Amino acid sequence: MTQQLNKTGKLIIFSAPSGAGKSTIVQHLISNNPTLEFSISATSRQPRGQEVNSKDYYFLTPDEFRKKIENNEFLEWEEVYADTYYGTLLSEIERITQKGHHILFDVDVIGGINIKKRFKSKAISFFVMPPSIEELKNRLIKRGTDTLEKIEMRIAKAEQEMSVAILFDYLVVNDNLSQAISEIETKLNEFTNTNSAT
Image (cartoon, rainbow, N blue to C red):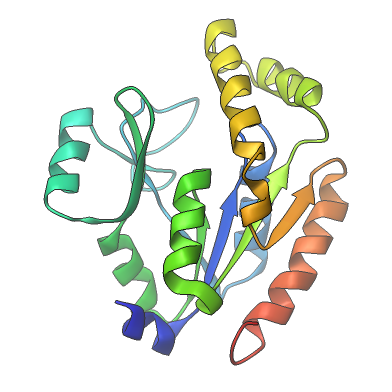
């Protein structure tokens, strides 16, 4: 698998607490760069809002997810909450690398760290930070997709995730969206246009 990736493209990893604005940044990058392709994650959670299976996520039941874990079908996976799994299917990596595209990952913090450890200089990792925990809570409330109890769980997890942000190559504070995107695009151009990342 590593050898195949060396021939085809590089890996771009994004992680962030829920509500930090990561998905908006990722969507912008994908829509403005034809050489980037989004790695669709698998999850056992229910779809939110207008999310579509096989486009936003591969939606699986917890049992289906566990079966794929047993069959070693994941590059990485994590049980984020009880019976709520997220992971990257090996079949998804194969789908993108066959096209010769760079793979863009939108993954859980632990997943992001694990992918970076495995592929080292073939990967670049970004951690998107909210300006503050208070602002993060406001964003989650405005999003209107979770109960207050679920939001409190997300805030607690965000604090834990932010404690390991230093393990990522770049920390980007999403206080001003256009500025955050510009900063990321500069780093991405440097990374994808060199023969080997440093």
